[in-house]
Image 1: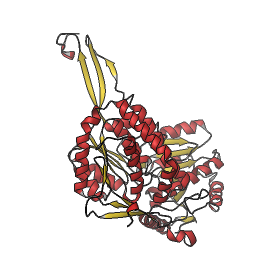
Image 2 (image 1 turned 90 degrees about the vertical axis):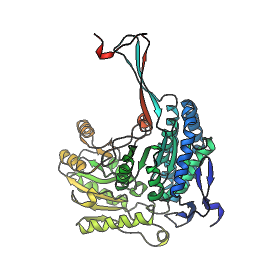
Image 3 (image 1 turned 120 degrees about the horizontal axis):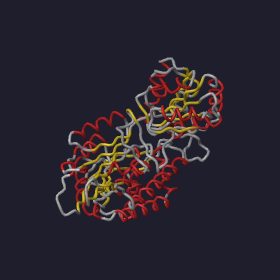
Image 4 (image 1 turned 180 degrees about the vertical axis):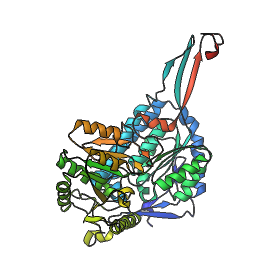
Amino acid sequence: MPDTVEHGLFIDGRWESPPGAARFTTRNPATGELLGSFVSGRAEDAERAVTAAARAFPAWRDTPAPKRGELLLRVAENLKRRKEAIGRVVTKEMGKVIAEGRGDVQEAIDFVEYMAGEGRRLAGETVPSELFRKMCLTVRQPKGVVVCITPWNFPTAIPNWKIAAALVCGNAVVFKPASNTALCAVEVVKAYEEAGVPAGVLNLVTGAGGVVGNALVDDPRVRTISFTGGVETGREVYVRGAKSLKMVHLELGGKNPQIVMDDADLELALEGVLFGAFGTSGQRCTATSRLIVHEKVYDQFLASLLERLATFRVGDPLDEKTDMGPVASADQEKKVLEYIAVARSEGGKLRFGGEKLRGGVFDAGHFIAPTVFETRHGSRISKEEIFGPVLSVLKVRDFEEAVHVANDIEYGLSSSIYTRDVNRAFRAVQELEAGITYVNAPTIGAEVQLPFGGVKNTGNGGREAGSVAIDEFTELKTVFLDFSSHLQKAQIDPR
């Protein structure tokens, strides 16, 4: 293995490769190209990272919050300067098309800049006291050592959502990324290192979740765990963290509906479903995986969708003209193809795709055709998260049935309705069981200045991004200042 592709752990401000450490590699899912070699971290590496974070925490906590924000502004500048290069790393390592690779980095930039401003806010509240010459207020204090465990589908954006918010609040962080986007994680950490993050304030440990992740979650010095990933793994993290009463924030799956009503702008709705369902090869927790169409426009809309897919370009994600790249790995390819087989066995009517693409550029990578099934509500592919370019199309009679179908699911992340009827739009906002609702736009994620998260099995109630992002990483302390110069007994004193 050439030295130029080997990467180490980042612990206590130093890059290191423990002697004799096992290693793993990442490869381009479009070409099979080797991208890098990384340390398979051990439990003792996780322990050392937590030790470094715990040691660095007091000084970082005592650093004025505006100064912590200034560090984040430098991080954002580093990401801007290298946006194209890092965007290409995202595309090479994860497989999303280059425009989305750049967008992944831009989202990171936007959020880091936004969180930098929190260094001059971190607001509590001041309220009047019921007693004489007394003040009542709350202040925010950091949790301590925070563990951030992130997925592979947004390999620069999601880590920065967590790391930037945790750091501006005054916490020290141990970052455990998904293994198949470890090179993107290295690029993220380098942006902080070059910005001058103090030793131990940010640490990176790569490796298996069952080894590194479990060791981090179990460490009694860790007070908060921020996890984004699958539901089953999230449940395990939640239960393990609960044993020591840790705060565990979970962002999990989605099975997001786009409703198209009979009065919708059908061309706009068509553009929305193409991007919502097949952007990032369907590998977004916010991906449009269910298309719910009013019976009056169903045949017309489905015909238009199939016509557009006939010219939809799948191929090299670095080619600016490509609409969709590969899925992220051999495991993802296997899972998606298994769900396609399930859909066939359930009697789903295949209308497009449904196969692994072969020949030419496709042979070296994990390419699956954009796939459309007409199916019934209640089928597995209409209810289970596939996380790939597979769209279930369902016909409904009216708005009420559309909302029922949309809500009759274990997830509740993003949702969408296309309609020109303002009353329907507002009813959808009120009635759709989801953390996010779009009107006349697809089920994409949130803008960074607004909260992101969902209900039901999509998570455990917290939100990332927006001003509430700091809630996850701070404790509220209530402060009473009595300057009356005598003992006051609140409810006991006579009124």
